[in-house]
Length: 75
Ligand code: FES
Image 1: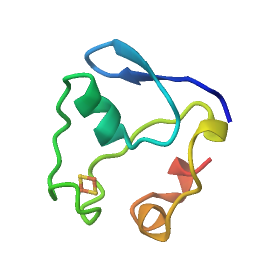
Image 2: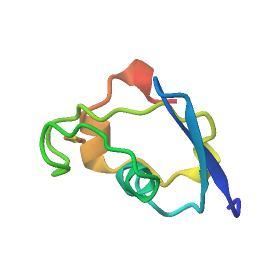
Image 3: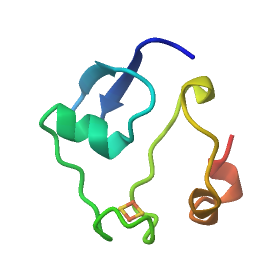
Image 4: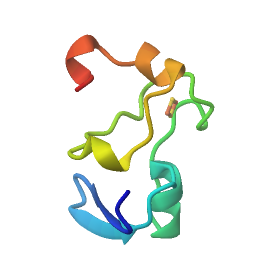
């Protein structure tokens, strides 16, 4: 696994470097950014989708995450 990964927050165009192992919500908070969360981060609404360009730096999809993704959204 890479030592550092880059996360780009759109539409802000803000790039941050971080270590793998954190959630996107944690990375945003660490960098003073807020992400809208319809369900209060309880992992039930499926509204907080992201685009991942390198699947090697993320964990496997959870069963709940798969439930919220269309087939075409899963690489
Ligand atoms: S904000 Fe509800 S599942 Fe992510």
